[in-house]
Amino acid sequence: MKAVIQNFRLSLGFLTLIPVGDIGHVGKGDLSRSLYTFPVVGLLIGTLCVAAGFASQYILASPLHMISVLVVASIITGGLHLDGLADTFDGICSWRPRAEKLKIMKDSRIGVMGVLVLIFVLLGKYASLAALDSHWWLAALLAPMWGRWAAFYNLHFFSRAASDGLAANIESGSRLQFLIATTFTLSVSLFTLSQCCVPLIHQLALLSILWLFVHLIARKISRSLGGVTGDTCGALSELTELLMFLALGSPLFALS
Image (cartoon, rainbow, N blue to C red; front, top):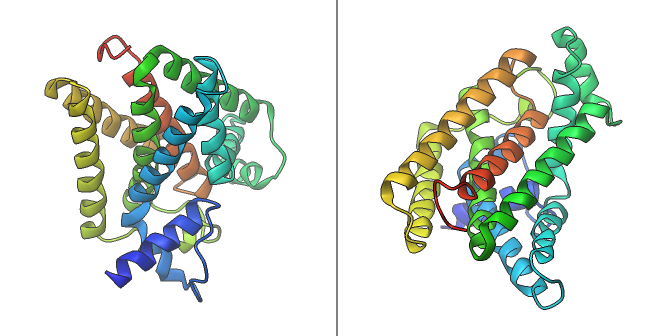
């Protein structure tokens, strides 16, 4: 149990700005052994976003209070995944050779494509929350968990694009780790969706679409860049969250 708590603290300190106290020296393999706790951190982020959304209802009129969900998510993570999303699209949409794409992604300046994708993703999330009406909390809770699971999926199944950088210092994680993370994510999702009376067939359809989306996008980005980087993990996390928002807000689930 002590090891599990330590792994969770490592992931929490890595993925968020939440203080985790002194965790001592963190070696190259320490974070790799904590990958299975990524979805747990995502669920915590989602819980805090839901709390912020409900609290802001007393200050802002609906659906303006849902802005607080996106603001809190950005603050908690320090914009880590949004930064990766912008950098990834700046590189990929430059249509230059692979080496130049990676060089563009390392540039701290943001380009037009990076700005546009940030606008589209944030607008898509907000519109989906508004469409969900009273069930907005469902997307706010589950999407961050699936986003962190997607980052683990990316690291687990795809090679690294470079020998240096954030992703290069994180190993793929064992099959057992991935099984634990996936079981946790599926269990929480199925239980939560069932509480909202979503038919099982719709639940399975949603989760299957999410998995297919994660795999196809991760493969597409990996082929374009020659592998995974820390930025592409952030991009995949944000895009997975967006799909969860859009799917739950669609007429298929009739939650609005």
